[in-house]
Length: 109
Image (tube, rainbow, N blue to C red):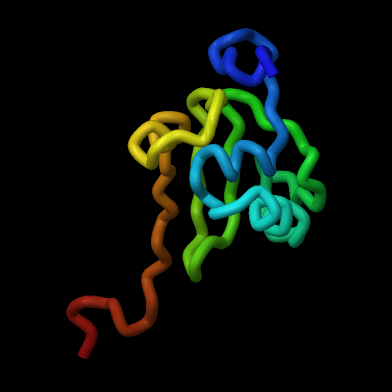
């Protein structure tokens, strides 16, 4: 497991389910596996259906979570499942452009 702690090392990889659990997107590793295997998660734009897919620093994940779509870029690979503040240091949330609905138009008669 020494390679998992070396998030800054070139070519370092981590299992997708482990990252989701360590980064606190899932309460347990089995839930993280279900998120990864549901077929709704995208890794760098590719649909993923296996929890053993590898993530790297710079990878972009998009997945549904609690009724919202989360899009994050991995900044570092965590060595452990730490407190939430520590987990948040390992990714950056990317904002999605929110589509404008019909009722949002201003100045409509």
